[in-house]
Image 1 (cartoon, rainbow, N blue to C red):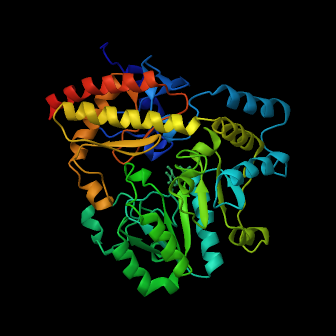
Image 2 (tube, helix red, strand yellow):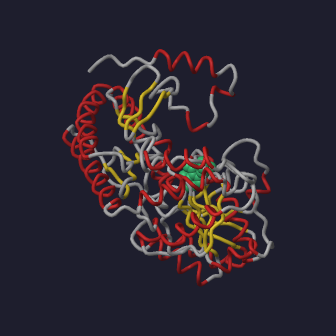
Image 3 (tube, rainbow, N blue to C red):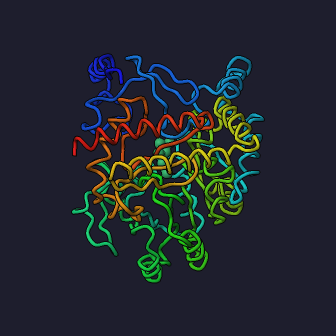
Length: 443
Ligand SMILES: Cc1ncc(COP(=O)(O)O)c(C=O)c1O
């Protein structure tokens, strides 16, 4: 292994700190200090590879925190975007044909979506979804789950990574804002519950259904290190919402166009009332959308509920949506993504077990996370107290040094793109075999 140097990245971070708060544009970009003392700075990416400013080459499983489902600089997407920039413009702030063409593609594939409104980030799409649910039901409270992440807005960024000591009892978690600066009344509109626990939720809904507008969940808790729903749990959520006039929101910001063309709702065969989507939707361009049942979405059509945005549905992003979905529509795309995911999950588990350590590589299709424990994670409390947190940063660091890039957080996920090959996966598994030996010397 050649020596891993990150000199220029370190220098750039020092310079960035003089003009950007903390040197960053998003808190998510700072790695845990036991992974790296500063963020890596990247120069370019191509396909499944990415190069940092010190010339280190990596197989990339971070993929821009998920959007790059086609890898870096996919030719068809670059061509589509170049074409609109050169020949049409980036944004008109007014209507154009790509709006309905992109919407038609989304509606064709997502079974629970009759109408779509585009926006530019997952955070925005979630905000619109919550407003729609409240407007539609005339109720105010939103049920959200411990450890879930649905963007950083005041209305939902609560109890995401709260310390266990602060969140009180499991059956009635205490509300904790996700950051300073969120007024307390926003929290009063939320009810926090443990995920994957039908009994507790059933009791809460029995008492409070009259106040609850919506339940919001990721169908797979990607932001909880790819924690999977228990058998029947999503159908349980569907049924309890239907029985109690509660809107079910699937936050498919990560899973839409990734688990299948039909998203997690197609993969699991459970249809929400409202879906939020982003990331894979635009293949790397800043676009998101909320979609859902006609009678709910039409509240925006009737102007009873407002959602607006200068850049909503801009030409550039919708050209990206159309080109990305067209690429994903190629036969065999999802069979391949799932096969690569299965190969990587099995390979990672095998090499860690061979080293005598516990491991679960959990997730589905091209989304996964490695936990250094015997059983899959179930919910936030069990995930946050896992011994895995002692090993995971060491593993990530050892992978970086050997040319494998991934989201450094134990609560994040590895992503696989259509640009990854079996050779990339096999290289990664061999790298992991070496990396875990190094980790063992540090335990
Ligand atoms: C499930 C989920 N919802 C919402 C968001 C917020 O999306 P954005 O970062 O585009 O605002 C994220 C971001 O990672 C997410 O994973």
